[in-house]
Amino acid sequence: MLRNAVAAVAGKGVARSVIQTLASVTVCIPAFSAAHAAEMRLLDSNPAAAAGYQLLDLGTVSAEAVGHAKGLEDGFTSKSAVKDGSLPYFENGIAGDGAHTYETLHIVPAWGGLKTGKVISIEGQIQKGDLDHLKALVERSGFSDCLRPGYCPYNNVISLNSPGGNLREALEIGKYIAEQNFITLLPENAVCESACSLVFLAGYTRYEGFFFPRRFAHETARLGIHQPYIQLPEGNYSAEQVGQVVQLINRGVNEVTDYFLSTGIGIGFMRNMYGTKPGSMYHLSLAEMAAEGIFVVGRPQDLSNLSRSQMLSYCSSLYQGRFNTVSPDLLANLQSNERTFLTYVTGQNFVCLGVKSPNGDSWRSYVCDGSSKCLLGDFGQVALFELEANGKLSGFRDRDASALMNIAAGIDNTEVGLALKEYNHRVALLYFVELFAENMGTFETSFKRIPASLAFAEVPPEFCGQVDEYDAGLVRLVQAGLNNSGIDVGTPDGSLGPNTRKAIGRANKDLLNRSETVIDPSLLKALGVPEDEVRGHVLCNG
Image (tube, rainbow, N blue to C red; front, side, top):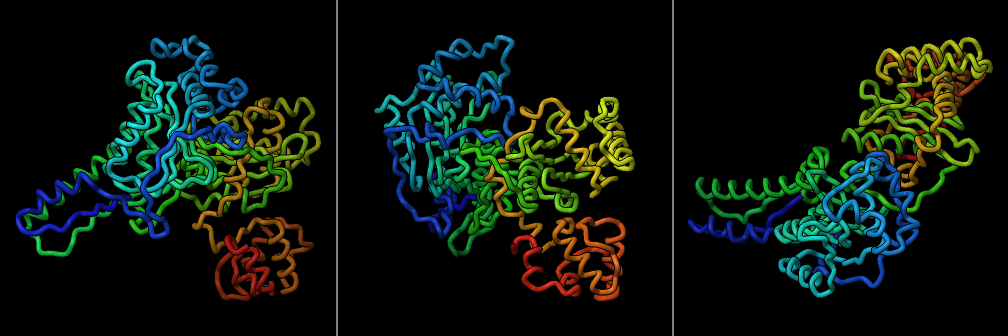
């Protein structure tokens, strides 16, 4: 992420020159970013007070904090109103009353401060001297709001929109923001890249050893990072000189790494940073931001329609935010109909499922990600025996009711993903999800709105070029093609069952001379599917 501009050095003076220039390290600015000097000003109004800044529940920041904050907005009419409701918990140190957790205590001044606090905006390239400018503006405007030095739970907001700039200055600004307990914000459509990320991530507190993030990003904002890169001018350097330079570079990189770790970010952030070349930029997804302790804000939307690719994008975003990778199982295990969807990753207790709300007007989702108790893991045989006793399984065919019981038995005795895998792509799995949603008793609190920003995100590139084999429309197309090719599979029904899979294997052998049982573009073309329809069923081409 960091690219040091090191002045020309020669002869034995290299160490002194490097030491001098290391203090004015500059971050690489991508070619598409224009360099402008940072403009700092106290805003006349707070952008986060607008209706478009509501907390989005992405499931990876403290659920307790998000849930508590959503019930507080009507009371946030002013900073004094925020203090009136919570000051007794903070004025003499953190003091709970048994009704609160640390999360529900800390979210009040953080969320209330974001919505009602003063805002200083920093826009443009960060340059040497900006820390002094910021301190002067804070002092001149009476911006800092502390109960005592270094203890400022009700402090105000620093808004950022910057392509990066001077590394050393960004580090010092970040340390100052952390010391002052300022809230940080990436407002609507803001871009914060390179050195700016150091400043933004400084929005946190660590009272009494408890870490709590005070950083917020609008769903349209972009947070970008890339790897360190040190460029020395051409010249002849002795082994001693090179050793001195390497030592200083390592010291600088270690300082930046230590700083990032102090802000509470995880290994996934560091891996993405060091894995991205200096001339490129890795932009964190919303789920990745949430996983790094960033509260995402925006305008919640009720989604009445979801395509399979949108289901895949949504579940993949959450999985990547939790595990810092994408699993092929998410596509291979995706099953859906008009009212339900499900996918999972075996062995990691990750399950992503969705159902239409009881009135049928919007999608809701429940996700197990291994970080907390999975309610689906409690929906086993006892729950189904109770449903059976109450006549709620009477509408199922005997074989489907038997499959439901077997799924429940698997959930009681093994990891959830393993229990589901045995019945992969069976209608019974979606029946099971519907029963879980209808009878768990906590639908309104446990099933969350699906953020449009995640559902409408691009399909992860790892899936691009693949065919979604279990798309019912595609399967019907394949079944019709098989019938036309003399391989009888009966009336096309869109279900990729054992008979259809066996027929696909035969078609691969007869038409393409290969031992495969997959549906891919080559098979579709061999079955006579028009080119435009083939492209329409290939992920990332639709």
